Amino acid sequence: MDEPDPRALDAMYGELLHTEDAALAAARESAVAAGMPAIEVSAQHAKLLTLLATISHATSVLEIGTLAGYSTIALARGVGATGRVVTLEYEPRHAEVARANLAAAGVDDRVEIVVGAALDTLPTLAERGERFDMFFVDADKENNVAYVTWALELATPGAVLVVDNIARFGRVLDPAPDDRQALAVRDMFAMMGEHPRLDTAAIQTVGTKGWDGFAVAVIQP
Image (tube, rainbow, N blue to C red):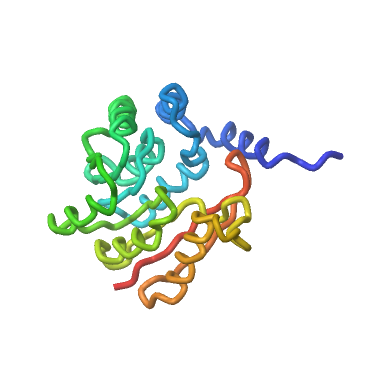
């Protein structure tokens, strides 16, 4: 018997659990049509984001890295009609596509897209007195330590932090000297492991997105 394909298992889960609805599928397809890289989270991971927001009773979420809004839709569903999501996106063209997808999904009224480099816009959120119950970091990996540091500053007590792309197809284990993304992920884990306010788990995944994973942490007061 041939060894089962993890991608086929992902597809089976999606079919049985009805994980990706029409709005999410349209968001994923719009990214392809716009020439964006296919780096959005998988349907199962999007559902997990929705559930984490729901389980943690998050009413405010900060997302770093919008792309076409696939994960943004998932987070907006998790906070419900009275919650809000602030999502930071570097590329204006990506933000434009995301706005259309959020409107099509019926969640645009609870999402604010902030365009610009996240390290430039995060201080503005702090100046506004923003605080968040959940964070999802899925942007340039080289700045992950800075993004986690900002999450610590902007978090409500007990906030949930999720960081995507932590395995990099295993390259994080022994990164090449010039693999800045893998090195940055290792630096992030070194920081998270020693920080007294972070309680963190690392979860590896296989499936439609290959070998990767995500970190989930609780930010203590």
